[in-house]
Length: 105
Image (cartoon, rainbow, N blue to C red; front, side, top):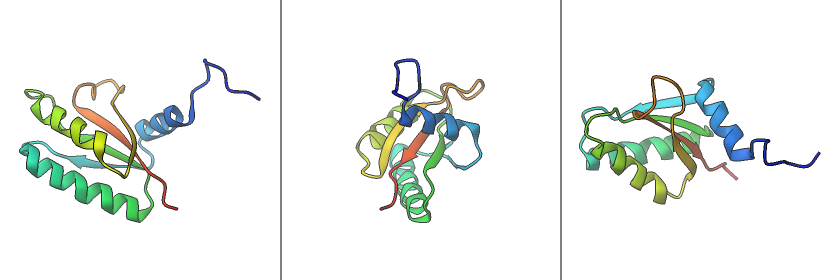
């Protein structure tokens, strides 16, 4: 069966699985400065990767948007991140980002 434009790709399926919450670990960054959040994300990304987990839910909150921007910038260049996107789950929009980690080889 060939993939069509209407069928979700592998990354989209991974995001759907992450948002379902079953295998998703959460990291809460509320109240952190950008440099503190980056250090916490780096530790968590490395730990989850080494544990073989693929999904991470990062809670940055709504606030002024500065922490969200710092999180997005950090995730965009981190070598263990296969992809990320803001949550599409009602109640999480604008406050949560889902991350898909690289697979261990």
